[in-house]
Length: 158
Image (cartoon, rainbow, N blue to C red; front, side, top):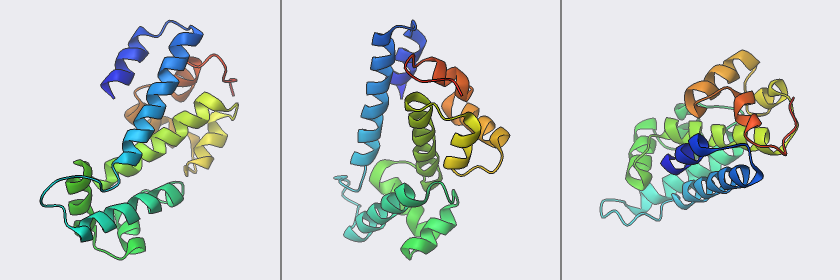
């Protein structure tokens, strides 16, 4: 995230800057995907690894339908407390933070690579009100969605 922030602050509107930001976002996605229970933490049990992998798959499949940790815990057959423990052991983040990271990643992907309007993107990622999406994006993405989109010259404004 710090590399993305540095690149964002150095961004000058050029295609090179946009490409660097896109690649850093892709690297972040790969890093998140790599956080799938392959931790060498000695206290990480096979049960925790399985729980974490099931959670990651469930988040990828359902992040647009629910952002509630309890919903994911129920879907994968464990308690919210067990899910939190597995996530903390696997990658040091809470389940809620991982859900939010996945949602922001998808929103950024749609903003950077499509011409969809903010309203359509809000619906795509599970918000019934675009204003709530904009608030969420500002809080977790650090800026307004259209300001983020402006960093990518190839994206069409919507």
